[in-house]
Structure formats: structure tokens, C-alpha cells
Length: 366
Image (cartoon, rainbow, N blue to C red):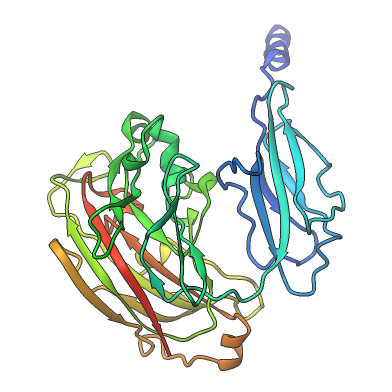
């Protein structure tokens, strides 16, 4: 036993130091956040750093904030976690791995979350591909919005794949100009090994937390941006071709794949005043949630080989709630439009090659 204890101690002593240098989370001791902080945004070549944007509530002093960071085991950070900083301008934080051989630079900036109008129309003509995959931004006379997708998660298995090989990409041949193309893709041997063999093409209002993609794929897709207008209907065009072979996890099954298009409108704080962000679980829960106010969902999820127009009314009667005008004006509601090439993709049920094209979306408000 004594000999074994010496051997065990030696093994622990000889364990290699951690070579990772990541920020895992960002929190504050005070209740200052308007939204949870996403620490997994892709590298910004303009900033020469990984960006972290912190949305705080109105009235918070941006020049006197003390972010607290959770780091990978053994890593250190400079400036120190919990130190007071002026985050009205970008502050560069350097994380150094436990073994001292690796560093990662973050650019951290805070802003006061205000009601920024979102567009009414979405044409998918503008993309940024600096991260190696397409990130869509739509702007019209009403406002601007950057779409989220699961592309950042797929990158872990994509290797050096080109942007066209990602589940969410821009394509030619839209109703007018370009369009968005959503394709269910294989995640290769790595994905199969961990029971996540496919990645459905998806795009939505909100944010994708890549760090949760492996452990909590449904929770990684956080749906919603603030909306101060009452939505009436969602319109647009789509076409869809399902893949040849359905699978559920790594098992091939009978059936035909289906796509999904829906929009949710919900209250973004609960009765205790806590911030609420609905996520990919909402569809699996049949859109039942205490915060839900209205749902618009396409009724036909099957194949359409030619561009097909759809017009989806928001169903308010389903939840029996009226819209509070004061809450609407002050940012108390979130909206998200969600689209996927495989209706069961979040649970890794779908067919590789299923492809959904969408173009010329429009949100009609009261």
C-alpha cells in the first residue's frame, strides 16, 4: 500500500500541465447583464483577438465594470479576473495556459443594451466569411440583424472544408439574387464517435454557444432578439429536397426527412425578473413554455422542388395572452425566426444531403 501510494503520487506529479488557454464564461457579482455573455465568438481578424461583447442594462457605468472569468484549468489571465476596467472601449485580455506555452488574446467590450430595431425584410445577400464559413447580415430601412447558425460548431469536424461545405451557406439562384442554403451534413468520424453524426443546416435570430455544442446541443442554440413591435405574420419563399437515407444517431432508419420554418414571440423576463432565453428545446417541447406569447410555423414540412411562397400568421390564441404595450415599448419581448434542413436535426435525426433554400423573408408587424 505504501509503495502504491508513492507510485500514485509520482503519477500525479508527472501529469502534463494543461495546454489550453480559454475563457469559459464571463459573469459579474452585480446584476448588470442584459443578456448572458457569449464567450465563443469566432476570431476577429480586424481586432486581432477573440471578441467578447457584454450587453449590460441601462444605467450601468461602462467605465467601472469588474468581469469575472472562468478559465481552462490552470490558466491565468491578465488583467486579473474581477479587476475593475473601463469597458466602454475594448480591453485586451491575455490568457496563458498552465504550461506557459500557449496564449489566447480576447478583446472585451461592454455596451448598454438598447432597443435596436430589427429589419422587416431579409434577402440573404450579405455575408462575412472571415471565420471560414458564411455569417449572414440583413439590413433594411427598419434596422440591421446578424443571423446565428451552428456553423461554428460544425467547424470542429470540418477541418479545412470550404465555406460551401458548411451546413449554412449562401447560394446562387434565389428568388432575387442570392439566398440562404441549409444542408444536413455528415460530421465524419469524429461526430460518429461522440454520437453526433449529422449537423442540420440552421439559421436563426439569437446566438450559438459553441462551447455547449457537444455537451448540450439543444441549449447551445439560444433563440431571440428584443422586439418592440407586435408581429402579425412571417412570409417568404422556400424549396426543399430531402436526403436519400434517414438516420437517427448512427442508426439508419426508415422514413423521409422534413424541414422546418417557424417564428416565436415570447416574454424575455419571468415573474421574478430573471432574463429568459428560449433555446432549441422549445420545438421538442411542442412550443409549450410559460414565456411563450405567439407562434408562427409552417404546416407542410415536406419536399418542394420549386420556389414556393408561404405566409404564416402568428397564433396568439394558442397561449391566451395579450401583448402589454408598455412591455413592448420597453423591450420586454423577444422574437426569433428559426429554419432547419432537418426537423429533428437537433436530436441528430435526419438525412445527409437534405437541402432547404430560403429567400425574401418578411416579418409583417402591426
